[in-house]
Length: 223
Image 1 (tube, rainbow, N blue to C red):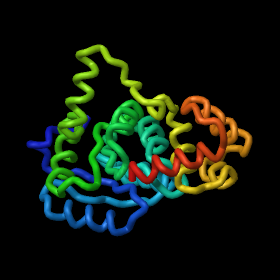
Image 2 (cartoon, rainbow, N blue to C red; image 1 turned 135 degrees about the horizontal axis):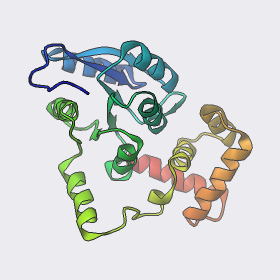
Image 3 (cartoon, one colour; image 1 turned 90 degrees about the vertical axis):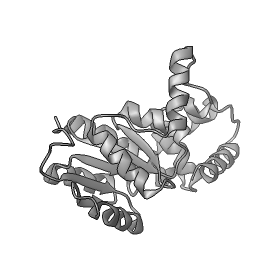
């Protein structure tokens, strides 16, 4: 268990997982101004991140959802399975309303948009280090309203996609072919085709062309 943030004498170690060097550098510089926080390392893909987690034992990992050779959701599951003590904050350009609940279910403790101000990122880190969940006030209110009103959390067809189906859907929208998706996710061509069919069914799309168009539009709107 992490010590109380107000009494701890050692600095909290932060691992950054993002495939944009400028983002990593910016977060490093931001954290450098904080007397109780330090960046202990960074990684740009799932494999490298898992090695860093094992060797550096960070207190908190800041994770982007779009990574080289994988997806942030996959990494969250992996870290949670390896070490439940490590806390995680997702920092992404993706739509919080779609991903926030998913990352919390996967094991992260917060979600913050990359468009937020620097002081908000530090606030999110400190809040999670205190053992609290961090979401935007808008998202927190939305989830609380659903909980108290008894509404279902599945509100749109895309919400109904599984985490893996959403990964495939996103990669389709990024212009990747079935073969390229299979390589990136280390799955067979047949498995990706099966995911495509399930996605079409859930989104009520008839053809592969409709799926590609729908996915491309979604990516453009959520990034």
